[in-house]
Image 1: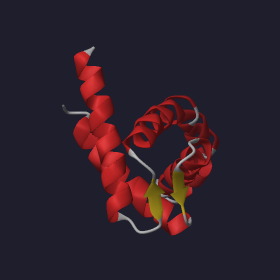
Image 2 (image 1 turned 180 degrees about the vertical axis):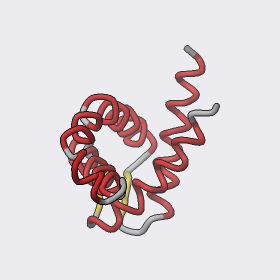
Image 3 (image 1 turned 30 degrees about the vertical axis):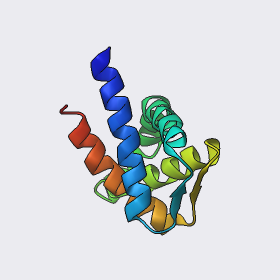
Image 4 (image 1 turned 90 degrees about the vertical axis):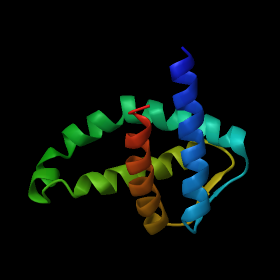
Length: 110
């Protein structure tokens, strides 16, 4: 249980870091990042596998690069759902989702 809470807080801190590094992504406060961490986790668990399956032919043609586009669109969707997060454009979402994926993978080893 404590491990889950530590990962949740760490992922929220990563979201705050991504917003600090990438221009065009703004987050109001830490509690908004905590809510965003839950929303992103739910989107990645429920919606992302379905989208990956539906876009499998495009992913095969692009050798998996289209997955980056899916990640960026899902990141924009999470920002649309959670009040207090703003993403100015697709490029910001793409860079933010790449950085979020790399740092999120590092958190998985905690």
